[in-house]
Length: 221
Image (cartoon, rainbow, N blue to C red):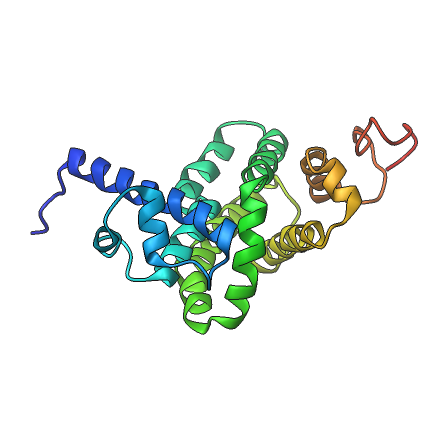
């Protein structure tokens, strides 16, 4: 029989992990992945170098932990469960807004550091796909299939739909990092535009709110 972990001890472990990830986030954003060292992270966290290895194997493990936290992987199941107890359209809008809010500020700086590393680091890429991306897709696909069965959304290929949505988000992040002035100036308005497009598409229809009402005429899509 597996021994249950003491809840207080679990909280202490989680607090220490977050302390280390907070420090790693600051260090990687400031120095980049390759210039940063475990010692840099330890100093930023105010702990001994060796303490980090009690929680993370190496710098790749630290990046994976940061990506997992940015993705809010542990909270995704609860987030999708909340969609079952209210209006789906409202949930989608709030969910998208929350995700884009998470990516603001230091989150975008981190992606500037982490995206190149994901592309060249095979170990990190494999772990990220297995431990973060695939579990998130599985939860989202299950939710989509349930919504389709209930008639809440139109029928379609749920796995492909999720990848389109994810690809759109990654593309917007990349465009923002490239210095797109529209995205830089209107990032806070972006979630409403994204939600409207995902929910209703481009074609006009009844009872659809105009996208970005403060910038477009009522006759706009």
